[in-house]
Amino acid sequence: MNKQKILIVDDDIAHLDSTRGILEAEGYEVFTHNQPFGSTNAIVSIKPDLVLLDVNMPGLSGEKLADVYRANARTRTSRVMLYSSNDEDALRDAARRLQLDGYICKGSPSTLRLKVAAVLTR
Amino acid sequence: MSHFPAIAELVTNTRAVLPDTPVKVVADEFFHDAHLDAVAIVENGHPTALMTRTKFLFTVFRQFGWEIYQRKSITSLADHDPLILPESERLDVALSLALQRKADDLYDEIVVVRGDGTFAGLIAVRQMVVQQTHALANVIVQKELAHERARELEEIGRIKSQFLANVTHELRSPVNAIIELGELMRISAEQGFVEQVRDRLTLLLSSATNLRSVITNMLDLSKIEAGRMRVFVEPFDLVPLLREVADTTRVLLGGKPVEVIVSTEAGAIPMTSDPVKVRQVILNLAANAAKFTDAGRIVLQQTSGTSTISIDVHDTGIGIRAEDVQKLFIAFSQIEDAQTKHHEGSGLGLAITRELTQMLGGRVSVESEPGRGSTFTVHFPKEISS
Image (cartoon, rainbow over all chains, first blue to last red; front, side, top):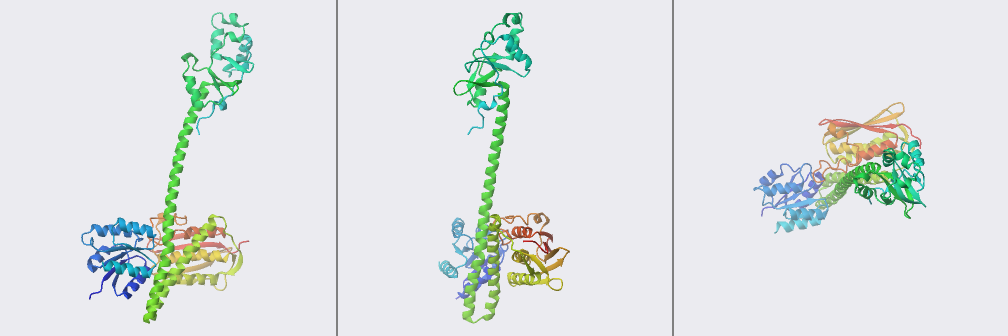
């Protein structure tokens, strides 16, 4: 069976590395992209089963980026979850408003595993 | 509250005569005081009539007026139905009543009485017009000020919530990274990958060090704002302090290919100041350099003047645009939208750096070239008294 693919878009190297490691240990194939720009192309070429999208990034926020994904025919159907250190209420609101596949608060590896698994088995 | 004063405040003329005062005496009053516009006729403390200068002159100098009236009492000439208003009447109301009078009486004085009806004084209508104009202008100015204040409060509120959003993220982000890196190290350790543990420890320490500096700066800012920041002066050697700052800077770099170099004059460099604050100032500058430098080097260079010690913190980072240099040391100036800001940080570090430097009698300056790097220089007095 092919590994499920996850793309993480985050400008923070510490988060990018640690999340990659945690998810690889779960058996996923993990790709990273360390800035908002060019991430649409990354989605198109990698065709990930899930995109974990950081919110606070230089130049273009994750929320705006999610809008861009939704407006682009080639990325519209990608599964996207917000993944951030921001306030949980704000993340939940944004995920609903942008009609994403949910959100994950950074800092809880067990929640990360559970939520990713839940979305990928849907 | 009304913006219009009570008319009591406008009374300046309190000239009054008894009803049986001869016209000749009143004529003398008008003659001797060119500014006297009117006199009130007052009996037992209560006003009964009003004699204005205009009407007085008009009557006594017409035909045989003077011959007819000079020996009579002033009551025979006076206006027996003047406008009488209580002194508590508001200016705008009083003026409106005055202007409703017969055209001939419009510019007469208004008689002002106290609460018990006794005579308080006279007010010229033209004086009321002038005051009314001032009051109206004041109302406009007050309204404008109120609007401006409201806008300022709105702006302060916006900055506060922006700041809170930034700070929340600044505090959570490194904590979350520490937890995730710890988890990852646990996985690596279980699998026996020692090399991976070592790599991640570097990142973990960098996150923890960064978190500590965010917390220190926030607590210091609140101390400074509350006026509780104290200076503890003692003699110390700057050299080991600079080495310590360099070590912390290396940790903050988290594995980026940046060399940290300390360059000092030979031997010990004695200072008498507050070593904790001196270290914090230099560390804030070096941490900033570490944040904005991806490759190259950071140099901490010390030089001495006759009574000062200067430390250059030079980096080969992204540099600062000329238009941004002015804003660098102002608290909250880095407050851009938390979601799209270009660099981590609460924007407080440099503001605190400047405050602390000034507390130690020093100053901080900066030179920068975008794309080439920046040099922050802090100048401290070698000795300050406690």
